[in-house]
Length: 256
Image 1 (cartoon, rainbow, N blue to C red):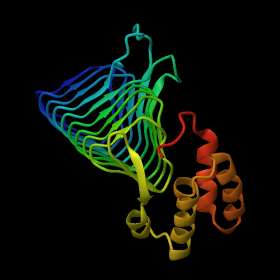
Image 2: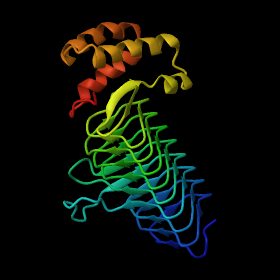
Image 3: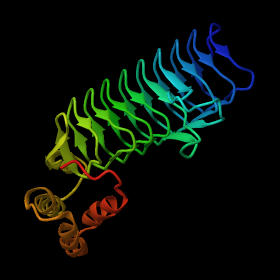
C-alpha cells in the first residue's frame, strides 16, 4: 500500500490500510489513521495527526511550519479528524504558541483545490471550502459552513454554522450563523434558506430565522436591543439561541 518511491520517516506512524502514493514525503511525528489515502507528491510534516479514511490529493502541503514571522521553531501541531477530502495544492499550517499551539480540522470536510488553512485555525465538521478559498490565522469555521470560491477570511474572524459565503467574498468581521454573505467587503444578504431546507430545517425554524434576520439586519434598532428581542424568540426555537451565543462570542463585530 506504500509506493516504493515514497519517502517515509522511520518516526512516522501509519495505521493499517493506509495508502501512500509515489514521491510523497511523510515526516517525523506524523500519524495517519487506517484507510486514509495519500496520493502522489504530497508533503506531510509533523507533529501532525490525521484520522481515518481521509483522502489527500497530489501536491498538497500538510502540517508545514506556520507562515508567521513570530514562529521560531517551537513544537506545534496539526490535528485532522476523519473522512476529510483535501484536494490538489491545498496548504494547511500547524499552530503557533501565540494561540493554543494547534490547527484543528474536524470530520467530513471538503477542502477543494488551492485552498489555504493558516495557523491556529479551527474548522469544525461538514464544511466546504471551494477552490481558492483562504483562511487567515486564528479563524474558526463552524459546522456546515460553505465558503465559495476565492473567499478570503481575515485573521481572528468566526464563520457561523450553516452560513454561506458567496464566491469572492472578503470577510473582515464575524459571519452570523444561518446567513448568506457576499461581496468585497462582504455584506449580509439573506438567510441561507436553501441550505437550511436541504439540511432538514422545517418551515417554522426557517420562518423564525427570517424574523431574526429582519430584526438584526433590517430593523435598524441597536444590536443591544435586538438581543433582547432574540432572547424572547429563543423560547420557541433552539436555532435562535445559537445566534445569541454566537453574538456573545463575537469579538470583531458581525458582517452587516
